Structure formats: structure tokens, C-alpha cells
Image 1: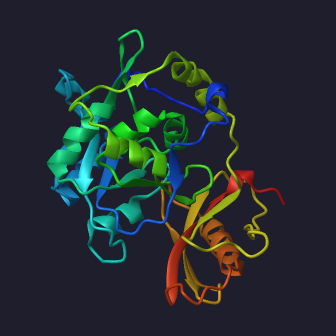
Image 2: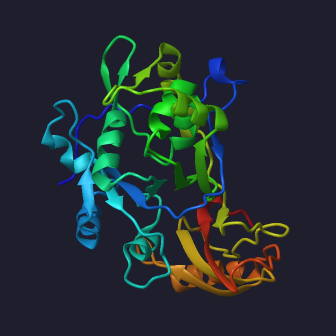
Image 3: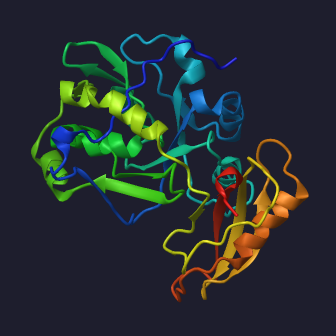
Amino acid sequence: MRTFNFILTLLLVLPATFRGQQLHVESIAPDKGLNYVILDAALWDTDIDRALEENPENVPLYYLNGVDHELESVAPYLFAYADNPKEKGSFAAWLVRKYDDRHRAFYLHSDCSLEELRNHLTTFVRVKSESGNWLFFRFYDTKIAPYIFDTLTEEQAAMFFEKVNYIAYTDTHTNKEMCVGPTGRVQDYIRNNTFTKGKSLVISTDQMEAIGRAKQAYDNIEPEPATYNLPGREVSGDLPLPVYEKKSDARVKVEISVNREGKVTKASTIQQGSTLSLLVKKAAEEAALKTVFNADNDAPQTQTGNIIYQFDKITL
């Protein structure tokens, strides 16, 4: 049902002409919870229907300047979001359970209403090249978001962050949570300039030339045998790997509970995709229980995170 034969996807990477310049976004520590999330129907496939049922407070971002409704099946959808993944039955908890390579989410914080933010973001769903051609701009794709936002000029960053305080997503390759917002210079630019409502973002030739390099660079990145996600905490020493003597291409996600001393007190495999063998699950959970994180007296008494093991990348 959710197929589309041709989508021009704009993939941007930090090209040579931009290196050395001050970045126009920066890693930040958010002072407020995230209150919006974008899900990409092109990646979520039929599961986007379930998401729409789970949270009816949503709007599509697919119609802009005459883009027709055929794009509905591959459109990004903007959802209102409450940052409460530990609340049983919440939309946030449902997203955490669904999370994997395909089910990824792009989070935002904004002071705008849902409709106001939708009107703002639709300006960036399609952008123009210098020659005036329309291009789909997948800024919400977590696989290329870092490259896109690093490439923006000061004015382009100001246009985007005029109504967005910051964005957050999980890095595809490191499994680390990223939270970025505009630098002080961009914030000054926003305060000192008036932006034309609905003005299209124009991508330069230099940025366009980065498309091929981005695709090639991304395709050449080898996934790590194991990655973890525990906000504010780091692994002490090396990340233990599962001991499993048979050949397997399984990708296993293990949910972990960690105490303030850094000890993993509980490890439970989250079922994903095809059925995993009990031995694969056991190997993954045993490795997770051996993992030690840095101690943090200010952390929750029990902090929840995850470790993902890519078995075909593990060498014994």
C-alpha cells in the first residue's frame, strides 16, 4: 500500500567548502521536554496507520504549493507528543517499543501550536535549487539529519529555528541520543530579522554537489558490533560482546536497567522482526548484564536504556 516509485531525496553532507566554518547548530542540554515528533510514513510503511490510531493529534506535512495527495503514503506526519515514555499505555511508550532501524522518530520542541508548527515545517518539506527546481528535503530523516543541519548557512538555520527551539533524534550509527539547537549567532539573527511567511529555502550549488558524497559516505559506514543508549552515562571500559559460536545475522536490542553505581541490574531482549533463537537472546542478555557504566549519584535510582548487538559484526 505504502509505495512510491520515485522520490527525489535531498541528501546533504558537510562538503569541503563548508568545513572550517562555524556550525550553525550545536549540541545542547534541553531545558524543556520534547513536545512534537515527526514520523516518516515512507519508513514506517503500514505501521504509520497504527501510529495515527495511537495518537489522533497529528497533521500531515505533505501538501505544500500544490503537492498532491498521492504523497500521503510516503509523507512525514507531525504528532503532538508528551515526553513520558515510562507511562504505560502512552504514545511515547509505544514509540519506544516500536523503535528499530525502520521505526525512527525525529523529535522537536516548539512553543507553537500543532497547526502553527505544521505551517512552518511544510516550508521545508520541499526546497528550491538555485535553478528553481523543487526538491523534497528530508530534514527529518535521522540517517542524514546531522549532515543536513551542519550544512545550513546562518540564514537557513535561522529560517528553520525561527519556530523550533531544538530538535532531537537517535544517531543511526552510534545509537546515541542527539539534541541540537541554534547557536547564539543564529538566535541573534532570528531576533534581528523578519522572515517572509512561507518563503522557500533555496539550496546552493555547493550544497547540491554534496548529494553524491553523502550517499557514498553513508553507504560505506560499517555498523558497530554493539551500540548503547543510556542518556548521560558512558560505558566503563570496553562494551562486552555476546559469546555465540554459530553464525548469525541477528540484530538484537536489549532493554537494560542500570543503577546509580553503573551496574546493569536487568536485561531483557526486545523482540524485533523474525523470531530470535533462545540462544541468541541469552547471549545478548548475558553480555548486557556484564556491561558497566559510570557511576552517577544524580541519575535516577533505576535508569532505563538499551544496547543493540549486530551479531554478524561480532568476531570471536
